[in-house]
Amino acid sequence: MKKLLLVISGIALISSIVFASGTQDQGQNAAPKEVKPIVLRLAETHPADYPTTKGDIRFAELVKERTNGRIIIEVYPSSQLGQEKAVIEQVQFGAIDFTRVSISPLASFVPVLNALQMPYLYRSEEHMWKVLLGPIGKELLASLEPSGFIGIGWFEPGARNFYNSKRPVYKPEDLAGLKIRVQESELMVGMVQALGAVATPMPYGEVYSGLQTGVIDGAENNWPSYESTSHYEVAKYYTLDGHTRVPEIIIASKISMQKLSKEDQEIIKQAALDAIPYQRQLWAEREKASEAKVRAGGSVIIEVTDKTPWQERMQSLYAKQPSDVQALIKRIQEVK
Ligand code: GTR
Image (cartoon, rainbow, N blue to C red; front, side, top):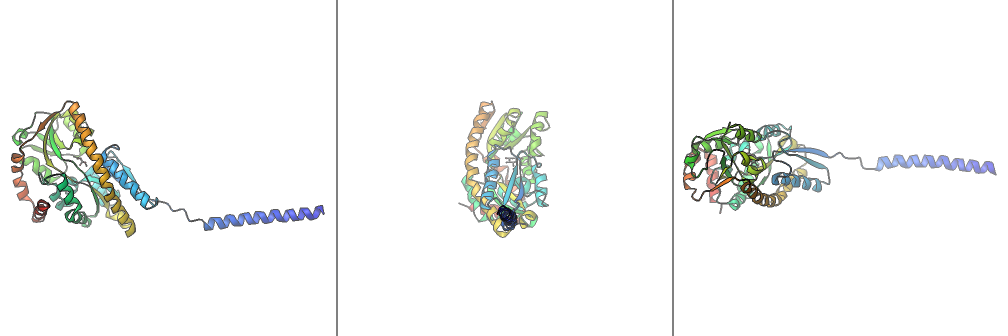
């Protein structure tokens, strides 16, 4: 009897081992293969707490959510992946997948974009957004493709104003001879020259030391950038001439996007569009907060009541534009 019991329990043990290992095998075969997410990189020049960076992060979150974690976009803030122009080049050859940049440096690659950043072009922020979200904005996003980029979406750029460390500027003549940093953009060089100042193109990250060492006397930017970079501490005269609204854009590398399915490409585009209201909301809040901080910091803020003399100086710049840009400018002006 004892023998029989031993044999039975022996058989039971063996069969349970076989069964267990069988289910284990079966389990391994049946479980869905662990799919590694596609990890893509987005380069941003601003710090992590900046409204535009937060907009990028929202965009990345929406993509992750809507692809159930299959596509992860990692946002690299604070120019960790390089300054804007260098980053754009890397996006063009697929070494960086996405970037959020100002269209100013991008227009060196796709000159028709200049139509969107002409000085004193928009009547208001609303006018600009109507253009960006309407047929013109869509056409211009599509116009990037032959240059190796996929236009994904727009972000709020605010209005840009001149600032300098030398003197209060009330009218264009007051800028005469001042060395003003501009973005790496031919159009912006032309704009500053038309105002009688000396244009110095340089990357954003070099402006603070440029101001500090006197390599430049001034620059131009919106309230949040003037504040977040601490430029206001070294160049305290800020003139509210609002010469440009230079749309911010998210672009993807065509090489990176082509590796994704059409559905995923659509999810990415839609996610960027859906991040816009969030970025605009944060932008409006930060604009106010930055203005308050700059004023409290002792900057001298100069209001410009009559922009006519500034606008008149831009006539030659408008006249110089090629016919495709001129045609777009006309259409933009006609957007009601
Ligand atoms: C900021 C813009 C940046 C960068 C910078 C500059 O307003 O958000 O992307 O272009 O201006 O002046 O270089």
